[in-house]
Length: 461
Image 1 (tube, helix red, strand yellow):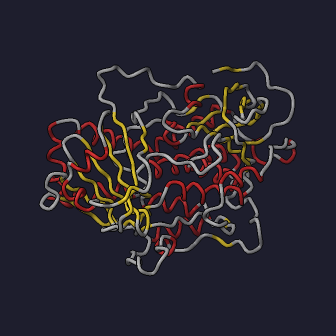
Image 2 (tube, one colour; image 1 turned 90 degrees about the horizontal axis):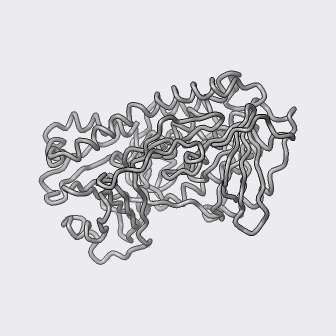
Image 3 (cartoon, rainbow, N blue to C red; image 1 turned 60 degrees about the horizontal axis):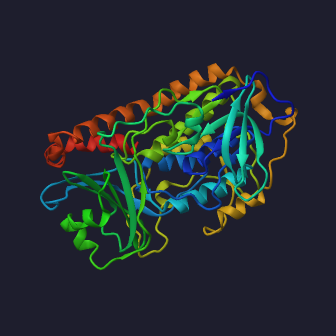
């Protein structure tokens, strides 16, 4: 990582540059904009960002989205059921979420909703890839390549949020990448595919086998996603075939998407920030997808990062005015916001917990009317044009921020507060899953339902 001796001449382009246009990066951008920061999202892909993931939003993630003025839609998820892959009918453990439903929805649709919300808040976009970064005492200069033949350009920001995923280039530029894992390491990978079949359950179903896990998530009226987690070399079709109940349910079902992969999943980092760059989401380290809470943690980390910047000056949450007079606070109940698109779906959903409703009401971000669901993300990004320089007098809160060291210390504390417990829980569960005790997981959950329910509630929140 390069540090400059002095700041370059000229004004800052923005207060916060968010690198990565996935859901976590967009959530960070929206949160920063609602706190009054000038924000630019840097992302090289001009379409909704997709990746291999389970696509289930836990109730806690739904609450975070509503706080940002985003109403997720899709198939309600009322709980989680674990099944023994070989004998699912007589070895299973299930639990219904107490705080109301989560949501199963396509990753691309979630990215589109977040992009529309970000654009309505005044977040600006650069369709470019970060080639390098240089820090100095006052800010960060990003060197950008557009990928369309334009000459390289730069973006000058006081702060950078690195939200560019498992294999984060920003983390590499900060020299926080872990050393290469030994060849004998049993690294884990993920695969995912969608099938045209009517969901048979409102639960996320996890089929647990000696060598892998299959996660089945309803994401639409006639669509389910199947995600496979295991060591390198596993085949999704073979894993389904080795799981009798799931194979029977998918017999004759058409594949709606190609198989997508991700991994290796385990990513270790020594720290979560350096200088004026904060790592958020998978870029800040990752244990495993075993618990399915990646987006929930990413959204919470984004909130912690924004709070670390805003804490010295106590900014109000409602600093940014609504885009239009018709905007209204996003205070609809979760059950309504995740209602199926057609009346024929219409499973009953429990009301959200009071804590979710009060959290939404206390933040009350303005919600701009959402554009058509199929509006191309590229068009939204292109409409913002190139980033203009922002005069120092109009930059808002960034000029009053405390030193970078204080912000980094606040973020490290915030990151550990929201992520420390879940990370340790996932690491412990993952470690146990690699011992002979793995075979006892589902039977133990069925015999000690109170313990299983407590574990699921921890994931849900």
